Length: 137
Length: 400
Ligand SMILES: [Zn+2]
Image 1 (cartoon, each protein chain N blue to C red):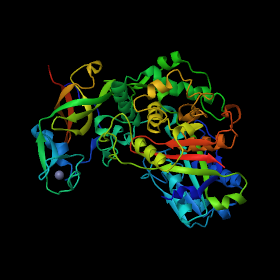
Image 2 (image 1 turned 135 degrees about the vertical axis):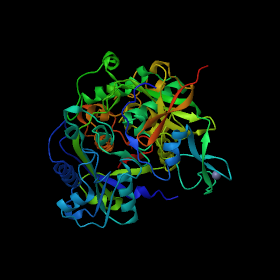
Image 3 (image 1 turned 120 degrees about the vertical axis):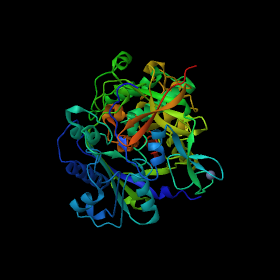
Image 4 (image 1 turned 90 degrees about the vertical axis):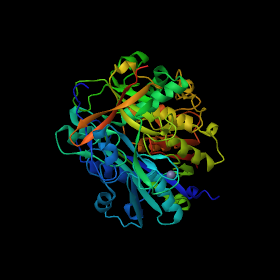
């Protein structure tokens, strides 16, 4: 990956650590409900579908689909790579689990809704930011 | 079902000086609006027994709020039976909806509602900055946490411009909506602002001007984003039976919408072509026998142009997905059209009074005091709606 852009980093807590630090082992992880199997995001103490507390951090494939995106042109903070792509992706295992993220590894103009992407991690201090790059057809 | 909000009426309105970088004390602007509203209703401060605001006092985002409940309470030495302020409510107008509840329940007779901003002065010449990102950009130890920013700021989505732009993009994708259609929200606002002496941007804007503007976050250009200002707006929400003794004919609250039935989130909401405003709109019509075709004037939030289009669809002025075609050409939403929209110029051209400006204009239109921009035929039914993303609140109002 090319030069890392500035990022405001998340505050890591025991509740979200599996998500923000899973990239250390190359894993995109979400809480998964034992009884009903659904993924819970953002992290919460109970499953939103069945209210079980039996939730375990579980790695997913990292494959996802671009649900929508925007090319950010405005320099809210200084950066060398305007326009960059902010997107919302739906994970392959459960499309109603979405992530706001960045699409990297292709020209911004190439990004489109429905595009197949896969996770990569950008390490900053103690967190691994999950970003997504196109899956080669 | 008793529609309890019909026990409430709007009996007075007030607005401070509104402008770019006024450099004035935000509390003073707030009090200017509050005192104007009290006087407009024919009341004195001794009559005010309730106070409500959005978002109230908060740190960390200079300019976003000009005063909290306690500062206004204390400055005016009020004696209150009920008070309320905060951001976790159904959008900016949630504070007014709460006031309707307070008078309907008998907690208060006359609730003073206010919203003040001084974002233009706070931002200075640098313009609009990142949400909560300033500290981080300055090399500080700021870390994003909490539902609105933990999963947005780390992905360089620094502004609601980014968040809303993605809803617009999805709408474009699913329904074929175009920038040329969306432009009508901005063009219509500017045309109306030209007739409003208090509007910020009054120079004509053409479609070419729109397409020549720099991009902010696709598909939004500069003119799809509202203009930060300094200013304050206030209302008096009164218990309906007291209204007969007051100066003005009351504006009746026919129904309100405050619902949020989907997930309260920018990225996890079930439909990325609409927002919480879908639910607030549905609730409003569930509480009234009136229908969209009865609305004479619509004042619908335009923090970003797309939000107005989403409100138009949600409120049933057209079908889901047909908002682009509905506003195309701009004739329908013009002052003389079938649905006069954002008649004061909206936040895009009149200034970002953050939700309260729409309710203010709805009242002005129902009282027939809008001057050059007055909708003809003395409008009897108005819709005021504010909020985007997980925030949404709306009121259906009728002239007495
Ligand atoms: Zn479950």
